[in-house]
Length: 231
Image (cartoon, rainbow, N blue to C red; front, side, top):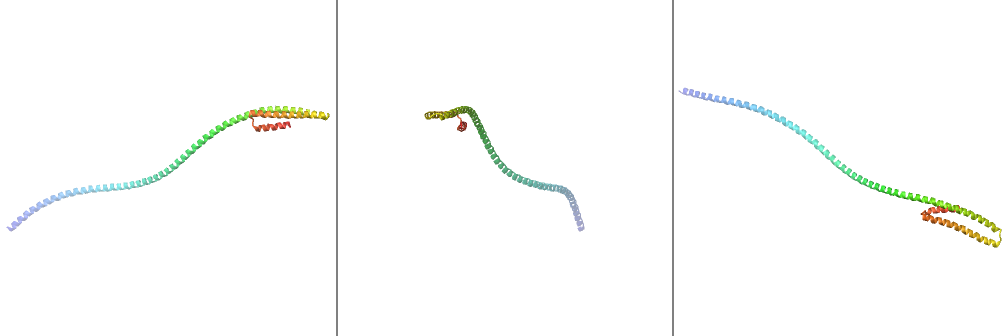
C-alpha cells in the first residue's frame, strides 16, 4: 500500500510535472517570440541609432562648416568695418576738400566777375581817354596849323623889320646928330612894336589854347618851337 501510495504520488507528481513542463514550454515559446521581437526591435533600434549617429556626424560636420563660414564671415565683417571706417575718414577728407574747393571756386568766380567788371570799366575809361586824346590831337593839329601860320606871318614881319632896321641903320650913319636922336627914337618905337606884336601873338595863342583845353605840356613845346623859329 505504501508502494502503491508512493507510486500514485509519483504518478500525480509526474502529471503535475508534465503540466508544469507544458506550461514552461508554452512560456518558453512565448519568451522566444518575445526574444525575436526584441531582437528585431533591437536591430531596428541599432539601425535607428546608426542613422542617428550618421545624422549627428553630418550635423557636426555641418556645424563645423557653418562655424568656419561664420568665422570667415566675421573676419570679412571686421575687414569691411575697417574699410568702412577708412572710407568714412576718406569721405570726410574729400568732403572737406570739396568744401574748400567750392569756396575757392566761389572766390575765383567772384574775382573773375570783379576782374571782368574792372576790365569793362578800364575799357570804357580807355575808350573815353582815347577819344579825348584823339580830340586833343585834332585840336593840337588845328592849333599847330594856326600857330604855324602866325609864325610864318611873324617871320615875314621880322624880315621886314630887320630890313627896315638895316635901312634905318644906314640912314643913321649918314645923318647928323639931331636927326640921329629922332631916328633913334623911331628905331626904339619900331623895336617896341616888334616885341609887342610877338608878345600879343604868343599871348593870343596861349589864351586860345587854354580855351580849347590843351595841356600845358603842349604849350611849352609850342613855345620852344616859336622861340626857335623866331631865333
